[in-house]
Image (cartoon, rainbow, N blue to C red; front, top):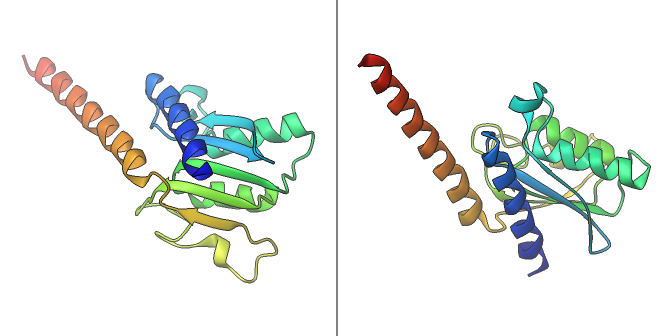
Length: 160
């Protein structure tokens, strides 16, 4: 139940990304039942390939807590993290990551590979996938349907 509440907040963050024309992915970082930081995708607007929702939330939380290590923290994100984000989560020593929609193209929590299950790595973050997966997937699908529709309108306008 608590996971759903935090994932709803991550979905709200994803809407912020959409409003800026970014892929709608949102994240919420929680410690001891308190939201510490939030983030949403911003790589296009910031010209920063690392400005994924998860990274933005990790950066904000580290700044707020005054430490790059975030033990005892949980990160809720609407889309399965990529390898870059999973690596950052491990370096931050997150206790847990909860994601909504699976990412069959770049997911690093089990869809393509699972970095969190690598025994040779020195930190192991607990992973829970599929929280509000239908809502998270629908948000992404709607965004890309809208984007394709806009692209087709532009192509038609250019032909006339």
